[in-house]
Structures are given as C-alpha cells and as structure tokens.
Image (tube, rainbow, N blue to C red):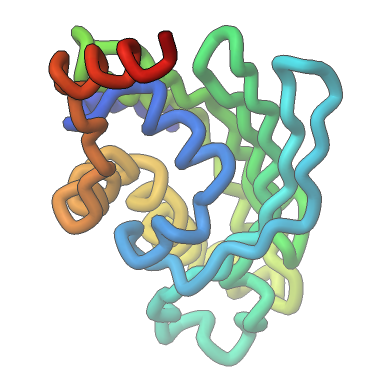
Length: 196
C-alpha cells in the first residue's frame, strides 16, 4: 500500500521542523492512537544529519479473532529516522517490536515552506503487511485471520502517519509561539544616544 498526503500547517517550517525533530513527545496528545513516544537514541552524524531511534507505544483495540494470541509488544514499534536539515525532511523506517518482518513500512516526511508563515507537510510511505509472520498465531488461523490482522495493523499505524499535520495545527492553536515584539524607534534612538 502506498499513501501520500499533503496538508498546510499554520506555522513556518523554521518552527515546525525542529519541533517535530526534537520534541515529538510533546505532540503525543495530538496524535491518534499513541500513548507515548520514548527516545532511545538521538545522534548527530554530521552538522546537517540527525539519526533518531524512537519507540512508539500505541493504543489499539485487538480483533477478537486474534485476541488470545496478541502480545502487548505488538502495540509498540521502533521508528528509525534520518533527519536531513538541509532538505527539511526525514526518512523513516518502522519495525514491529514483536517481529521485524511482520510489516515493511518506510517513507519520507517533507516540511516545505509555504509562503513566509506556513508549512506544507507532505507525508509519503509504503506499507506491506505480512500477517502470516505474526508470532504465536497458528498458521491455519493466520490464513483465516489475515484480513483482520492486516486491518488491525493498518489502523494502528496509518492514522498516526496521516494525521500529523492536523495534530500540529491543533497543538499550535493551543500553544501559539511567542511573537517577537517590534523594537520601538524612540527606545532604540534613546539607547543609541545614551551610548554616545
């Protein structure tokens, strides 16, 4: 499955990009189906490249057909990200915590300036699910439960990828960045006189 979405965020890329790169945990309340995000590693490999490993913890309802086989670790995943500051983008690869090959998910998020005061967030990703590789689910059941497992994994992962822009807009509606006060000409002139 390939998916792309593009939405406008009501803040400039210079504010959006570092917030998502460096403080993703503050956005958790604005991302559906996510309980928490834990940063495992954040390392600069050059002046413009940052490699990050986060663990995401999901909130999800388990389909009845596989409920007895599903382990709690299914509700978390490894997120390996390479942030490219010069390009205002991040390449990511997601791995299941339960089984590395349960699904293949990778993509790129672009934080593109949209005028002087807005950002276009373009999210692209490819997702391929392999429910037959789900540990603990008998092969005969995996075949029968394949559609339910695929739908469950899709519902757990894709809303978070596709709704980041909406979450950012809500976040900034509740937490507007401080606006810089313009320097008054008279005050600046007085300062200049007092220094001479």
